[in-house]
Image 1: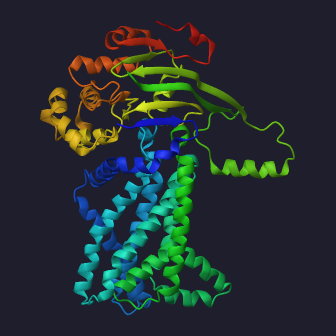
Image 2: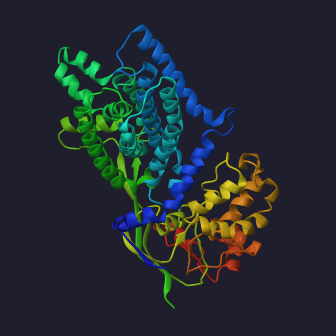
Image 3: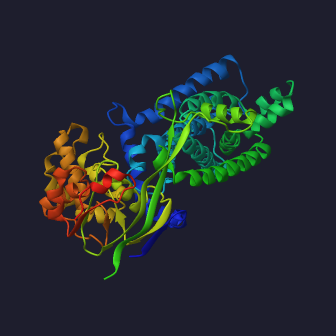
Length: 279
Length: 242
């Protein structure tokens, strides 16, 4: 057994090694939350399917049939599905992650482990839901005879990008939420707002076209692109065969996610050692 | 014999904030911080800021050594710093000054049942609890049967813990803690925290002693001590030492 030395102001040194040592805890926390998520519900995991299906149905009627929004050359239901699944994952992961530290306050103040485990496992739980709900996309593609091309092979990349987006935003929000509980009230609003400014129910190109015709259109376009989920959703649609124009949005999303992730990790690491004192 | 735990000049400082007239705030609101920042932009010197800050040393100049195989009890009045000591040893919070040297793994448990989830079954909770204490799955499996047998929960192993009686939960949690070698356990320090039964409960009482009624169990289960925490506030100097 190794000798461990804890000096004032130098607790950080073993951090990454500890993260590896506590991988079992990461596994168990995710496993616990997955188990608990649908306990005492009648239909259980089906909830992971029903919510997206209902949203897709409403959007298909509302935007596809009534408002006749274009859909990148895809059947509208498939099109909405490819936007809704990543968005719903992001929204759930972000809100669960940001509340995760506060919810596990009793553990934080009683035992030591790298705190990074908590928001990460919250994101993973939502990710499992995403994987389950991918079944819907497969079913819709079969139903509407959408032939997958080689592009489908890139879907894991965009899924990983979505995971990165949720994690990077989650790191910021969870750490901020420990100190400023304001964020508990901000997050539902962000989720609701984000739903409309992300290309869930409309194609990105169509939206950008309308946007740039408005006053301050260029500025609004830049703000629109700052939303990291724009690139992820465009990527999803492109991967299943949509005619989305990827080049701009995917690059900006990768840059934004990278920046938010790096700064989020730094902020988290900096505030982490005081979590137990202020939570 | 080398020391399993060596503590030198350990100190932990907290900052107390007194907000006159406002009562105790449950948490910091971003609004208040921003308002305060904005205010201080316009007010030239920080004259008579609204909250008085006071430094408080929960622990200071604490040094001791615990050798391999020793069981040590720490006692002291409420607020003497016993829990802070445990928190520092188990790395929950960072020391303000001084240094701690530890040999092997530390699994500390300030309160039994940390990480117990009411919706999970007894079996699931035992696994979770082991992971919380830093065990691997293989290690937990090895101890599993022993714990189940001792906690007398075989019949309810697959019942959610929320349906347990509160006594059962306490008993199961305590057994878990003991079975997994919790408390301040440095794997080479106090390695044998495992059964027989009375031992665990005695250990439990020992480490959490805060009232005089707990002193007899301490002296029974500890090889050294009990010794009182050296505290920064004067009244505690009168606490028991032996």
